[in-house]
Image 1 (tube, rainbow, N blue to C red):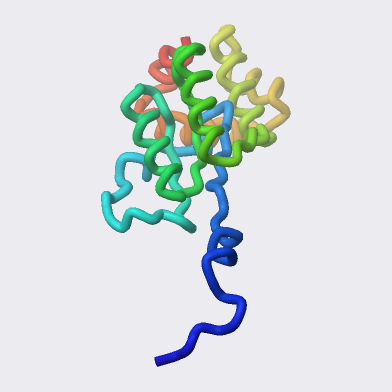
Image 2: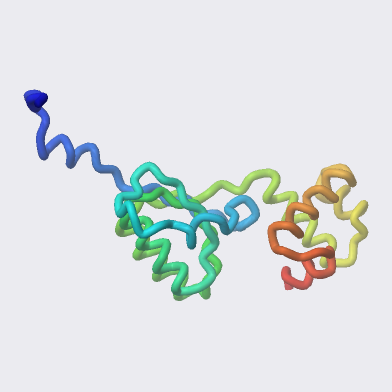
Length: 161
């Protein structure tokens, strides 16, 4: 049986324990819903695991908090009423290191496209205003439609209202 090495002990294990990292994004476009509700009960220690999700309900907030308490890193978009959102983020900040996600150029393109389309622009006009090609705009809208589970741009725009 191997003997413990000198210097190994309880103090080093405490130093090795790191707080989970939680990245909060403004948009759920790149967060995705997969993962948060699929976390198994065992093993209890989720250190080194990355879980993604969109928090829309208090139940999902409790699940995310539990997952962070178990040591998992999280990438989240929090879509809760302001008071509930603030309380959730406060609780999460007590057990994890919080990082504000940076909005990517793609996030800005998605937002710009949807906003221009909501105002009545054609896809070509919206693409030009967003600084992307018509083809790229069409692909971005396809990603958004797939992400939200809708088939048409009209359905997508209805969700944005």
